[in-house]
Image (tube, rainbow over all chains, first blue to last red; front, side):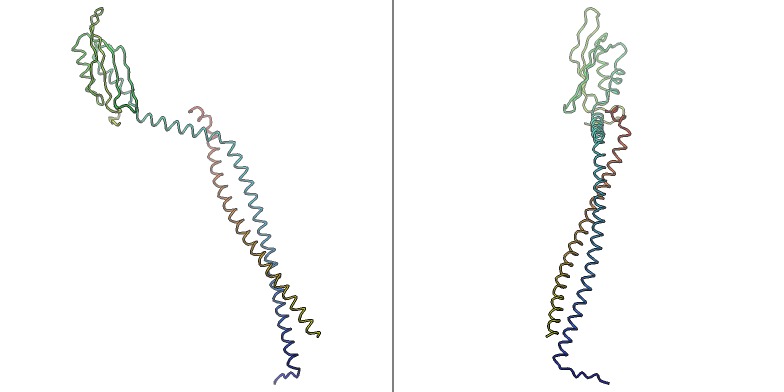
Length: 193
Length: 73
């Protein structure tokens, strides 16, 4: 069976065009609806995200205020750390006087009296010295003292700057200069500059 | 004549619809960009929050030993 339209051709074309326009209009309305719904949903999501962001910012501000109140403790900790580092550095490079002085004491013969001991150390200096003043009964004892001191590791050649006879007591007064060749670590046996 | 007027009305409504669609599409795109920016800002803020949280925990731990620190200083 065939459907035969007896309407005029122009009328048929006009109806077809109207039908197409209506379809286009319907599609447009559907698109508008879809876009409007998408826009509303996205605005809701955006508002929610903005609220979350504001809450985070507020929490951060509170935390920063708390951190600021604790800032002095951090400064104190930094000072302590810097001081500890300084102490560690100094302890690493200075001679171990607590080991050196007993060694000197042990090197002195029993009949030698130490009247003065001056020790100096500077990290920048090439050579650091210990100066000891003492009394001995004779020159041989002074020589023995010099030999004993020279035998100690880390000590340079010990020199006697003067040796005089004390007329009142009859003993010899002497001054010895002991150069520290390196930064002495007597206990560990390690020497380093 | 009647058909032509109706056709013109439909055409006008269709043009208005197209304009509205374009406007809505632009607003939707702007909103999408805003959402993306908000997401980035939230991630950034969360990172800052975590760092601050660690720092605060460290400072609070230091606060507990504040007296010892003062003594050692």
